[in-house]
Structures are given as C-alpha cells and as structure tokens.
Length: 521
Image (tube, rainbow, N blue to C red; front, side, top):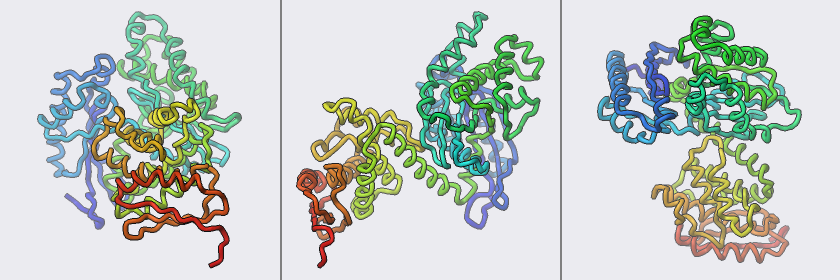
C-alpha cells in the first residue's frame, strides 16, 4: 500500500450501503487531488422494506452480505487495507439495525458504521459551504441548503458564511412515496395530496427567513443526476442552475403522464421515474415556501466527503473547526429566537470557558466537551419562560429537541442535562431520561454541570456585576477573584450553594474573592 510523505495512505475505499444501492468507490490522492480509480454499484431495495415494514428481511441481509463479499475480493485485488463501510437512512431507521450490523460482520468480515442523521447532514452542509464561499455572494444574500434524502430532508440557512439555523424533516422522497402507496396504486392524482402534506411540514422555514431577505437556494441529495438528465438530457454534471418555471413544468409533466411513457421519453428507468415524482414534489414545496426564483442543483456525495477525510491530512481539522464555528453560531441564533438574556449568556459562557481551561488537569475533557459546555451556557434560558414552575423541565425538553449544527442526538441530550441545573438543583442527571446515557456521558455531565452552576452563580442576578474575573488553583481551593462596586451578596450566596457539589466532583473548595473596582494597591 502506497503511503505519502505525511504517513497517509494514497489509496482508500468507501463502501456506502444506501437505501437503493450499495456503492463502492476506490480513490487515490496525487499532489493533493483525489481521483476515482473504480466505482462499483449494485441495486438493493432495503429502503422500501424499512419504510414499509420497519425491518430489513433476513433475505436482504444475505443479499447485502454477498455483495459485500464481492467488494472485499476487489479490495484484496487492489491491496487496499484503508477502507470504511458506512450505512445511512435505511439501516439507521430499521428496528433490527444492530442485528444487521452483527450479521454483516459475521458473514463478510466488514464492520459497518451506521452514520447518525445529524452527522451525515453536517458533512453535506460542510461541503456545500465550501462551495458557497467560492460563489462570492453579496453580503445581503443568504443561502438555504436543502439536502433531500431517502428518509428525511435536511435544511440549513447560511448567512455571512455561517449556519444560523438547521432543521431536519422526517420525510424523504422514498418515505414520502411509501406513505401514500395505497393511494398511488389506485391511480388517483396524488400530486395535490403530497403538496399539502409537504407544505405543512415545511411551514417552519418561513420563520427563519427575514422579510425581503434575498435567498440563494441550493438543493442536493437524492436523484440529482436523474433530474439533470430530465431537464437538460445531461448526466454526471456537478452543478446545474434551474429556473423555477422549469421545475414547475417538469413536475406537471411527471404528475400527468403515466410512468411507462415518461420512461420511454426520457430514457430513465421505471424505478427512477417513480422516485423523481416524489423528489420534484419536495422541490416544488421548497420553492413555494422560499419564493426562490431558481435552484442551484448541486451533486454532493457523502462518500466523496468521507474519502477526503481519509486521504487529505488537514481535512479533519478543517471539519472540526467548521463544526465548532457553526454550532456556536446556530446556538446563538436559537438563543435570540427564545428572547434569552444574550448578555448574561455571553458572560456565563466566558466564565465557564475560563474555569474549564483552568481545571484541565482535573477534568481531563477535550475541546469537543468544552464546546458542549459553551452551548449549554448559550441555551440555558431557552424555554424557561414557558412555565416558571417547570422551568428546568422546559429547558431540558427545548434543548433536547433543538437542531444544533454538527452535534449528535446524544450530545444534544448532554447539553440539555447540563443546562437544566442551577445552584439549587444539581442532581437532575439522575432523572429517568438521563439514565439512558452511558456511564461515560454521565461522568461528563457531572463535570460540566459542576463548572456550569458555578459560572451561572457568578452572574446570578444577570446584571454582570463582576469585572476582571480570574481563576486560579491554590492547593485544595479554586479561587475566583474579581472586581465590583455593586452589592454581590446574591452571587456570593449562589457560589456558596455550589461548594458541596463542586468539591464532590473535583475535590476543590470554592472561594470567591471580590475587591472594589479601580482599587490601587
């Protein structure tokens, strides 16, 4: 196996188990550029099984195993040891996912990584955001990214090169079609039904978009190649700009003509034609909601992005930086949406980061955990005003159900657990919901919660009374010093309330030392 001067394999492979096919791509890197050596595709139908029956049949598992065994033989011929097998929507949503992963390992020797929905969309958005930067759009133009998958539609709004909102709608083009299978098979015009169903699901986008906001619409995902062919009789394009009138016209044609006629006219297979109708229905509804005049159709494949992560030395660092930057941007916009006290949240975030960094030798947590703490600080008031008597529960449920760019469902849950605490409630991580977390994540919650409640206590009045706040460790004490000419009795009381829990977690006593501002020593 060839290795470059950075110790990175020059050749790698990605096996992608999708809803309709299993694709293997073998690529190599030369002078920083990735080129494909071979692409193999084999059709399967596990997506339909999952969306209609909720499970993948044993016959399909055997079929997938045989295909994987064939791919393994090809890998051996190339001498490739650097490969990754991934699965997305169909396996992810199947009730017997774990069993299938186990059987594929037993029958083919391949470890399949089931990619979480949020991470899949993050990778797609990351690739598209790099493309947006190349477009050099005017500052007053925002971009809505729509990623159409087999089981869901991902949406992200980008302003000033940052994601400000992201959302996932649990209805992709195959799931949409399977939802209305009985009606479709009865030869009734299902177009209006699909449109009204999608309009209801996509209505929330309107709240993201400012009045008179100029919008650039990018759509990627399922069947982009087929749409290219249907519109321009061109396949394998990377990008195509389409006016809304072209989409309306194509949708009307696919909604009125029978499948066999369309297949013959466009030279597209019967199964693909069935898929395109659902895809176009989603396009139509996004156009209506956004009032966009055109669509930038962009071909972006998950396997290409993951290949770059495997073959390009700095690609992972670039992705990590992108996630941090956009997760914080997304969280701050959610904070604004819930009319939280932004100044207090910013102050709390600064205190928490200072304490986290000073306690590095005590908590042993990485920068990803620091990001979760930051987001908990930014979001900790979201939902609290819904019902003051259940504010902790409301905060927990609000954050748990937020779509924060780049974070997994479990990370959302960790943030929700941390943010639903204060100096008077420090044992909520024992609740029934949080017991679903692993022991490792419970420990993370305990450590970050201890830092969070102390940071919150330092601005308990939400009036930012303290300035020049510094943190140091002296023997068995964490000493927090600051300056203030205001009455800080509430902050001192709140910090004192945190002492017992903080010492339990870190073995350190808390000491708050406040001196008057502008005191000359």
